[in-house]
Image (tube, rainbow, N blue to C red):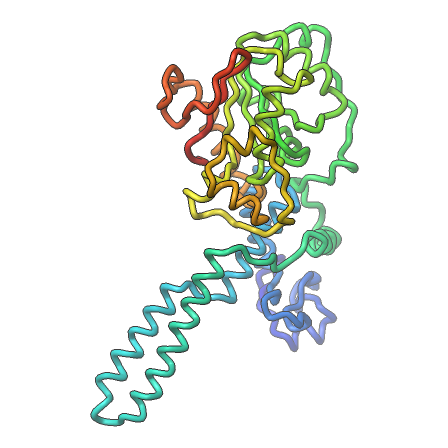
Length: 368
């Protein structure tokens, strides 16, 4: 195992003799694979360091512990499982070799058939695991503990976003600025996603307000809402998980008088929607409680398979996307809405979902 400080190789005997420190520079190791009972969680400091570099796009993007959890879960599962295509190829090779050896030794052929059948069974199981929701390999408390240990030895991870309760800060908007408004607003279904966007200056780069449906950031929320409601040309972008709360978000924005229920505005549902998940086939689906409550309007706006997918307890979180990818998708959605022909039902990447006297709602055909 290599030391991340000086790149010196240290075998288990070296690490044991030096009390978990590098034999060359005396830097402490955070993780000891040999002490981990779960074979899927045997990883090194270099593995964890690479995950931090990738999740932050080499130190340029703030990220949440949940986003890091998804990345680690994905990579640790890859280390301990084979792709079904690989297993199918090995199975085919075994069958071919067994056929050629049949005349020389029929016993080898029989053994080959059993091995091939085992590989085919493994390929089918791997395919089902990738297609269907699977339990998370690691938990968020585990990731937080790993980060705590990492920061104790290697210093603060400055791009890691603190929990909302610890990151609260008092901000204010000057009277001169509050006299104006924004042309765009991004509304998130969760405070953590709004925090992520604001920390990465998404609001500055897109000249838009970023708020959560639950009122984050609390210190300036009321002032920003007053600014938004002054603009009759406002465009609103909804961003959310593919779950019941997420698909209810647009309905709340369009009808709730505390939001935009009394304004004729355009609302763009960027996703995630069950339709995008079912169409894309590349999202990390997990199982939540099957008791997801859909509003009657949200239910009517969904296809039967989307309702069935939600009521089965399926869920895809925005956190499952890499931070850089999520920012790119949102930037693309906003840019596309500016250039699409929204005067018809087939305007670019958006289609007309709802058109009422108070607002027009457009849905994104795909997520990125």
